[in-house]
Amino acid sequence: MLLLGPQHNVQSLREGLVEVGARPPYVLVAAGWEEREAETAALEKHLGSRVANLSLWPACEEAFEADHELRAAMFDRQDRLRELGRLYRVRLAAELEALRELLSSVDPAAPGELVGPALEPAFESLAALDEHHLGRVRALNDEVFGAVCTRPSLARHREVVARRLADAGTLLVAGGHVGILYDRMRLFGVTEALPEQLPVAGWSAGAMVLTDRILLFHDSPPQGPGDAEIHGPGFGLAPAVACLPHASSRLDLDDAARVALLARRVGAAALAVALDDGQRVLSVPGAEGWRFDGSASILGSDGVVVTPTRGAAR
Image (cartoon, rainbow, N blue to C red):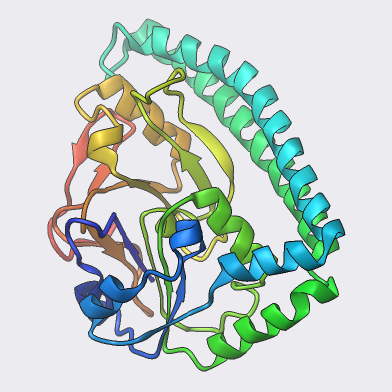
């Protein structure tokens, strides 16, 4: 398993694939690029190899055109997801405001005998809210995808996906719009058809969607409060890690309180990994933990950002 930051400015995918023993033929999911999904020339040049594009974006558009009930079900799901998100954010704002107030006057690594005991139940309350929202989104996804994935309008495309993955040497998952990427992969059964032990590499949003849960984050967005939030479940192919692409531009990594808060949101059993341009972490069969490239960093619950040395495992 290979997880990488954005590849626009610093391309490290080819080197990372060598490290995990990945090989062609490469099969690509690039639905997160939406209408630009077919623009794979730069990727093929970097890899020095052709990639077989699963073309999930046009496949979905074709299915929607042929099956209005499918289209209606998926659009209704989006409406319900938006309402779940609105309800979640009403409570989330209050939980985060309380924690930021508590953290504002202390060192997260040593909050003291008075503030420390107040922080723990506040973190527990926030974790419970995140889990509650994650569970509601997961249940909605299971309901809708369980109902629509057997529709005849999807059958031919799902068969093509399964056949191409059966012949693949490596699955590549590109970035883009993380929500669309998850939806298309789920709709066409990409992870269901994935052969056991097939190497998988994802970058940017493609790395996020492979983890247990998708966390959206931005400390200073153009609009809105900048509260990190749970988007929903990922595919769980990359456990015990949360990917934070574009971390240095989206996060204030010098703000110990914000770093600590985000790390605690990820959970004690997972690593909050900042993945900027070209940075990567990987896991290899038979080895424990995630191995670092010497530039990717970990956000600590003490508010400290640490960059493990190259080859270090966590």
